[in-house]
Image (cartoon, rainbow, N blue to C red):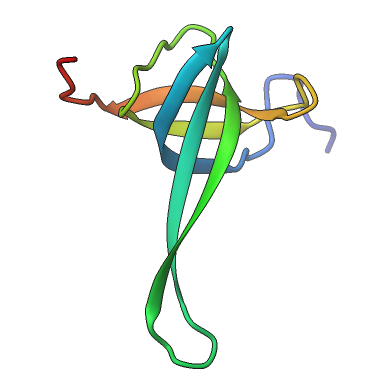
Length: 92
Protein backbone atom coordinates (compact mmCIF):
# COMPACT_ATOMS: atom_id res chain seq x y z
CA UNK A 1 0.00 0.00 0.00
CA UNK A 2 1.64 3.31 -1.03
CA UNK A 3 2.05 6.03 1.57
CA UNK A 4 0.00 9.16 1.24
CA UNK A 5 1.70 12.55 1.15
CA UNK A 6 -0.05 13.58 4.37
CA UNK A 7 1.53 10.70 6.31
CA UNK A 8 4.87 11.58 7.86
CA UNK A 9 7.64 9.51 9.33
CA UNK A 10 8.05 9.53 13.08
CA UNK A 11 10.60 12.26 13.73
CA UNK A 12 13.17 12.00 16.49
CA UNK A 13 12.55 14.50 19.29
CA UNK A 14 14.64 15.63 22.25
CA UNK A 15 14.01 17.88 25.25
CA UNK A 16 16.59 20.47 26.26
CA UNK A 17 17.26 23.95 27.60
CA UNK A 18 17.91 27.00 25.43
CA UNK A 19 21.41 28.37 26.18
CA UNK A 20 21.82 30.98 23.43
CA UNK A 21 19.59 32.95 21.03
CA UNK A 22 22.22 35.35 19.67
CA UNK A 23 22.02 34.07 16.08
CA UNK A 24 19.38 34.90 13.47
CA UNK A 25 16.63 32.26 13.34
CA UNK A 26 18.80 29.89 15.41
CA UNK A 27 18.87 28.84 19.04
CA UNK A 28 21.47 26.70 20.76
CA UNK A 29 19.78 23.98 22.83
CA UNK A 30 21.63 21.88 25.41
CA UNK A 31 20.29 18.35 25.89
CA UNK A 32 21.28 16.54 29.08
CA UNK A 33 21.10 12.78 29.54
CA UNK A 34 22.01 10.55 32.46
CA UNK A 35 23.94 7.34 31.86
CA UNK A 36 25.59 4.76 34.09
CA UNK A 37 29.39 4.59 34.01
CA UNK A 38 30.41 1.39 32.20
CA UNK A 39 32.71 0.15 34.97
CA UNK A 40 31.69 1.86 38.19
CA UNK A 41 27.93 2.15 37.51
CA UNK A 42 27.80 5.67 38.95
CA UNK A 43 25.27 7.86 37.17
CA UNK A 44 26.88 10.59 35.05
CA UNK A 45 25.30 13.57 33.29
CA UNK A 46 26.31 14.06 29.67
CA UNK A 47 25.55 17.27 27.76
CA UNK A 48 25.36 17.99 24.05
CA UNK A 49 24.44 21.21 22.23
CA UNK A 50 22.27 21.26 19.13
CA UNK A 51 21.73 24.18 16.77
CA UNK A 52 17.97 24.48 16.25
CA UNK A 53 15.96 26.49 13.77
CA UNK A 54 13.50 29.01 15.22
CA UNK A 55 10.44 29.63 13.05
CA UNK A 56 7.05 30.38 14.60
CA UNK A 57 7.98 29.57 18.23
CA UNK A 58 10.39 32.14 19.73
CA UNK A 59 12.06 30.96 22.96
CA UNK A 60 14.14 32.87 25.49
CA UNK A 61 17.33 31.77 27.23
CA UNK A 62 16.51 29.25 29.96
CA UNK A 63 13.29 27.92 28.40
CA UNK A 64 12.82 24.15 28.23
CA UNK A 65 11.91 23.22 24.66
CA UNK A 66 11.23 20.18 22.49
CA UNK A 67 13.32 19.93 19.33
CA UNK A 68 12.51 17.63 16.42
CA UNK A 69 14.76 16.41 13.65
CA UNK A 70 14.38 17.90 10.18
CA UNK A 71 16.22 17.94 6.89
CA UNK A 72 19.54 19.83 6.96
CA UNK A 73 18.96 23.59 7.02
CA UNK A 74 22.62 24.65 7.13
CA UNK A 75 26.03 23.18 7.96
CA UNK A 76 25.19 22.62 11.65
CA UNK A 77 21.38 22.88 11.82
CA UNK A 78 19.42 19.63 11.60
CA UNK A 79 16.81 20.36 14.29
CA UNK A 80 13.93 22.79 14.77
CA UNK A 81 12.15 23.98 17.90
CA UNK A 82 8.64 22.54 17.85
CA UNK A 83 7.26 23.75 21.20
CA UNK A 84 8.12 25.46 24.46
CA UNK A 85 7.47 23.13 27.38
CA UNK A 86 8.41 25.45 30.26
CA UNK A 87 9.11 29.17 30.31
CA UNK A 88 12.12 30.45 32.23
CA UNK A 89 11.61 32.73 35.22
CA UNK A 90 14.60 34.96 34.43
CA UNK A 91 13.59 38.58 34.84
CA UNK A 92 16.89 40.04 33.63
